[in-house]
Image 1: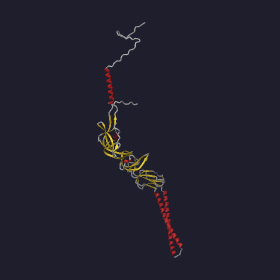
Image 2 (image 1 turned 30 degrees about the vertical axis):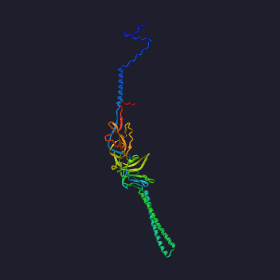
Image 3 (image 1 turned 90 degrees about the vertical axis):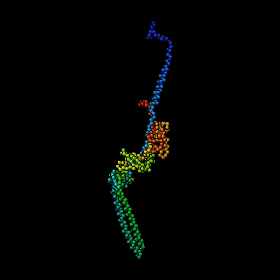
Image 4 (image 1 turned 90 degrees about the horizontal axis):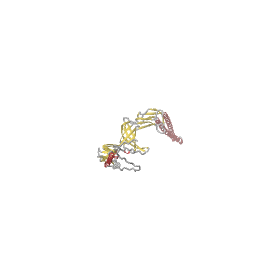
Length: 422
């Protein structure tokens, strides 16, 4: 039984009739109006303008780091490390062996020339002296005896000589008397030589006995003591060191090791300053007194000993202190100077900053860039002394208060977002 179809259409409206097998029709595309096209073009132009503003106006211009050209001093120095030592240190040793019996000097003892600092047991050496003195006495007695024998031989010969003139004795008897006289005379010579030998032996024994007193050869201060009472000193192969005596601690020197690359500019009389760890805020001043020609090679590094003399009247400096030394090799006062970094700067596209050529023994042709009207301008200059911080300008189109460029920096976009941390 057929039922009527329900429809939501209002009365009077016609509803489309859908056939069961009829194909679906696609509606035709809608055309854009001219107003929509203009709106799209305007939006694209606005995006392009926004992008240009973002990337063009958002980057900061080139920024230059500059320094002012000024007049000042330039000092070229050589730095090295050295050791503070007394000007003259005397090594007091022992010529003989023995046991230390007495000790009269200690560290920091002020000594005078000839003062006894230690004493070795003298008894073995005293016995040798007594023996040689006795042997000398025997030799002297033998000389007296032989002289008496010589006197008798002389008298006997004179008597026989008178008798021989009258033929009272045989000639052979006179010859025997002459031979006895000659032997007695020769024996006296032997005795005199023996006495000299025994006297020399006695003096040698007395010298060794005197060496039992260890005395100071100079006026000074004991800076080192290497023996104690009861210690045996053996001087068989080499002289043992008993004391070190500094002659004058008011005058000190710094023995500085300077490398072979810096030794060429150091000469006697150059000014020097140094500091020690004990007085970090105090600067000691001295002068180079000696450049020693003896090289020292340690691990293929060649150094030379440069001696710097310094006054130490207040005794602040102690032997053995480590000194950080600065030796003035050359100096220029009140000259036009620029930072050395300015000679190494070169803008992009201008080529490297090198190309310097030497024009004189001490002057080099170089180039700096001066900031004028916001733009870098290359200026050729002739440089002189360089102390690694500033360089002397000998000639060139530079004057005081000019701004030389030492570096450049291109800024990042102002609106750049920070990088997220991973």
